[in-house]
Length: 409
Length: 145
Image (cartoon, rainbow over all chains, first blue to last red; front, side, top):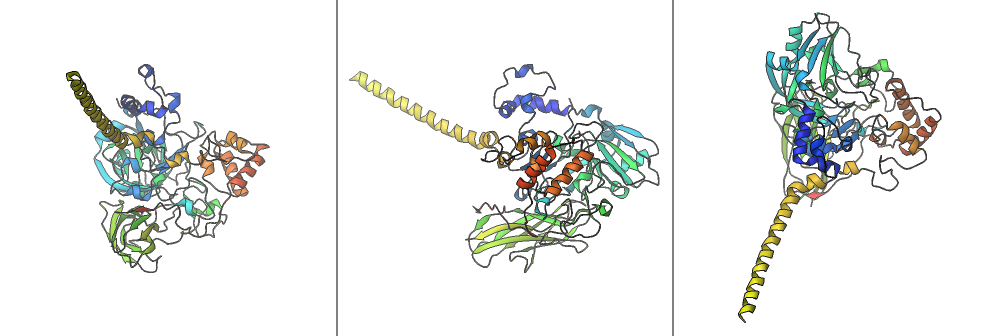
């Protein structure tokens, strides 16, 4: 039985948690036909439905969008319960992994080829990497004038362990032409309007990114099947780039001889002004450039903001830092609003494109209110800004330094 | 005399049993609350949102004002109300969003309702000047051991 929904259904029914979701016993529960969705479950509790921690923040229930808080992201490898959900459309309704296929087509393939999920799993070598996925709009809520869309604060980032096959092994097996410049993905999710001719999202990456060792067609997350909300049964994973490149519920990859022009590739989607603009300025579509690698950023994941500590006691802080395609070379903290900076110790990434862990022990000079600010610097010398970075119409790429409040009493 | 003694003994025994049952019940209760409680009972703040506050629509969380029902009827068919209520835009910004949805997302022509919707949104969901970086807010202070 690889039918994900049904398996989950049976498991939940066995645990009796269905009754909890609905708030009543399902009297004829044993007579429900297989695969039937109870009306009472069509607007269910997303925290239960997706096995998320109740402290996660729900931004949107249609489509589902949910983010973590900084202190929830303390694990070195992000577990499912703290992983943000960013959906553009509706989750596919009838996923059957047993007959799932991936088609590789497009102008730049020698010949269209179709793989079953089983082909991918059995005919190609498996690889596992810890990969940082951050939503391009993470931090959008801070832009002024405000930018349209889900108002992410800081929690639309994760670094889980993904297992699958290399996209480059598949593309090599298919055979791609010299004129290939881009790959575009297609998936089984449903447009919000339920118009079957529309795709909620169909993005992609330049061929060089597609051919990287760490770019995976993943079928496992953290050692188990990918959770439904995160793309079961197959997901493209392109760490270090806006997470929208990592298409969920993947069923087709088109190898293109032009920049892919699917939904949310054009206009202002996942694009920023090619040249800096003043806050609020109108920018023509042709002056917007596609986001590639995500910028350098970090999060203090311990302690949670708002800690009160005793005078004379040191405060141990820790967190993660990442820099898109690059590495973080330096990590610092400030307790005097950026006047002076002290270094944190920072670990090397476990593999390329994985976030790095930092820690420091802080002594405070006297009682009072403090903010601990964290600042990472990437391998090309770029640091996080303390104020908001360049304003852009859709509110992408806010990598301003993370701040937590501390009182010494 | 003998009968009284037996009765007293029986009462004492009953008390002991009752105390044991009581203690057990408290332990089971604590365990139940600790393991089962939060998962079953806690409704995250984010779900409650504005929906329990006065002045807000209980079902959608929209601010109650003229035009709200028109907004609900036209703007929550494809997506949830939260996609509207978490945003702040000028009247021009809301109009541009409507046009974008009509051009690419299958939103229908709004006719006379368009002005009603725009006025409601521009009044109740208008941008605020937050500067180049807002101060930390909503800090929940706690003692770190």
